[in-house]
Image (cartoon, rainbow, N blue to C red; front, side, top):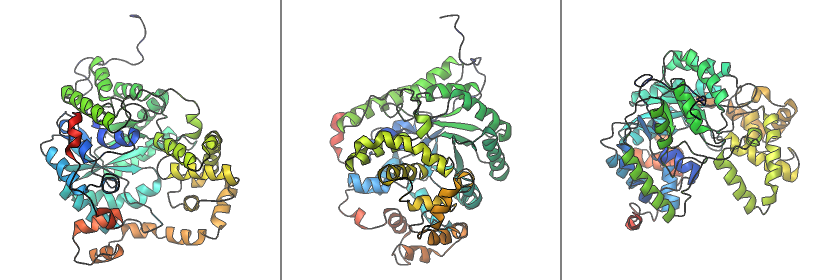
Length: 487
């Protein structure tokens, strides 16, 4: 094989810049393969080593979902977990990242406005002063036009730089030119520190990735690109090589056992390939082997999968496009409904729903309500019953262009917007842009969650995220020490 042609070029030593890895072990890694089930007692043994391993950026398990996870599933006070992570990461030289979806569109309550966002992130900066990066989803034009003008100056006032994570779609409208235009707008308008290619469905092929990188680099004006790639088609480790070959140095990885499968490529594999390509790095792999050993023992003790491999290539993935976490939840829900045998029919129906809705990106919340609508279509007839989320979609609540509204089946769109429940949705949705930019008083937003004007900022944020005080009842300061016996 010594004369075999290499699939990529190999950079001469010292050329091409240093590898700048982004770690997602304790955030997206655990979400992808452990269902986010990670409490104080599972984070504490490894977060310090991750913080000191040499990553450019570490994404932490200090995010909007953690308070619910801590209280509801582990009976822990999330503030104790945050304090522990703060102490463990106090000397890190890495950027510290927070995962946020931006201004949430939630028509069951109220979208987040500028005052709410400010209070939340002022509090999170107190819980984790090292925060200086925030992942913000970039899925629809409405997010860019309605939310970014609020979010970029607000976050920068707190010393936090936003990194737009551009979720890649697979509809006919999602061309390389489409994404290049968006990169151009982001760079000219906001000058972000970097822009991420988010392969949320894990469906990017090396051929398409090369085209995307070429088109996006041409408009980036030197702004670094990142690659965030899940493993649903089994190609994300190879795609990391392709990205490095094209000059990208910011690659998302995880440490096993929270790597591979539907998660991100293993940090060990990416570093090994980078070394072979002559790309330098500053990673302390010995610390990460300690992390791997401890997480493997903890995972076994708590019944989590610890032997994750690259997934086989499944051509049907390109039809239904279901992210890994969603398809596992779908199986569970069909089992609970007593119709596990319906899965093949649901998988066949999903591409039809995607076509009807104009090929939106299969990412939260689209993936969840598209799959649910597909289940309903198979059980009671196509579009005989319609989710309110589909009405919101047809009304443009989630964006007009890449969300698919402009490309929808007109008959389905007309039906959704003529339903009795559509009128209040349309009326409320028309005010979203105005509401997001609004700045009600702190007393007003505290009153909106049932708190008096003199309630502390921390009380407001916990009530806002938990929705009730009941979640904080019967919690312990932190996890039990019993886990230590496994180490």
